[in-house]
Amino acid sequence: MATVTLENVNKVYDNGFQAIYDLSLDIVDGEFLVLVGPSGCGKSTALRMIAGLEEITSGEMRIGDRVVNDVEPKDRDIAMVFQNYALYPHMSVAENIGFALKLAKVSKEEITERVNRAAEILELTTYLDRKPGQLSGGQRQRVAMGRAIVRQPAAFLMDEPLSNLDAKLRVQMRAEIASLQRELGVTTFYVTHDQVEAMTMGDRVAVIKDGVLQQVDTPQNLYDNPVNVFVAAFIGSPSMNLFDATVRIGDNGGSITLGPHTLSLSAAAIAARPGLRAYDGRQVVVGVRPEDLEDATQTPDAPADQRLSAPVRLIEALGSEIMVHMSIDAPTVDSGDPDAPEELPGEGQANAVGRFNPRSAVRAGQTAEVAVATDNLHFFDAETRLAIRD
Image (tube, rainbow, N blue to C red):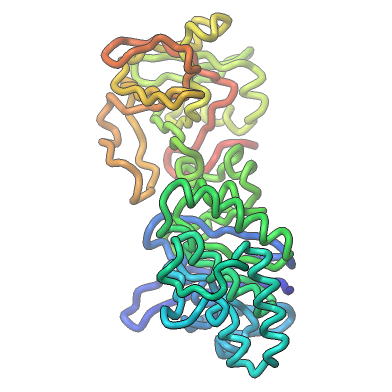
């Protein structure tokens, strides 16, 4: 096991396109770090540079104490798990798992011992004589994991390994990979575009956009304290609702105005964000998590000045909760995520999503009275898009 360190790493292709800008990351010994971002943001390029499959234009990369900028992939002591499994169809499961050891001239006895151990961990013992074509997608992914495990590498690199699986199997394999990594304690760098995957698997999560690292933190801190509008919208499902608003600060609290709606802010809410006082009378971006919007009939204690009325467009009943899509008569904000559903920033009548109590009686086509947990709002500078806190 080892640390993996990137210091001011850049990647510029021959045509002048820069895929990675001054990327600095420390993946500590035994850590599961997930790099997440939208399509085309540079996350797979970063992984391929660690693997040695892409050359680094500038900066320094270390695995343990060794600088590996110019070290061949086979000599970096890492094991990769690919999106498409990359199994040899003519070989048995046992032969696939042990193939790298055979190339390394490891003795047959040790190969058998390591393969059997990996198969036991991954519950593949009964499949060792089968060919990949006889296995399910989840079983083939386990074989690919087994091939990485037997090498006993300093680090695992995983490039969207679950994207070819169906939704139910993806949830199962998420848990299995996270559990396996903790059991083995191997430093792991995992790339995905799925923020739910990132939040549920990583010890820490790094968010990247257009080749620029945005924030690195624990999953909960990313969710609770996003540094900018992009991270706020990208982390969380459904996404954070974002609106242009005007904030006003008084002696004993304040308010925000969203289109025709004015909501009060408590003194405690402003005290928790001292930097907000500098924005008195100014436009800001306000973020509201779906769980901070609720059917007012389910929260009768919610003050009248922390409620708004909104036409309900669509309801998604999920059993334990309902997702209520509403029209809020306020300008929405472009989060900068190219994969986000298209809206009309600044046009008004924005779509907002609330996570309501399943006992709510709201119906599509009706107007709902919605309680807003204003103490939990997020505030961002309208120009820099950075969070307003201290």
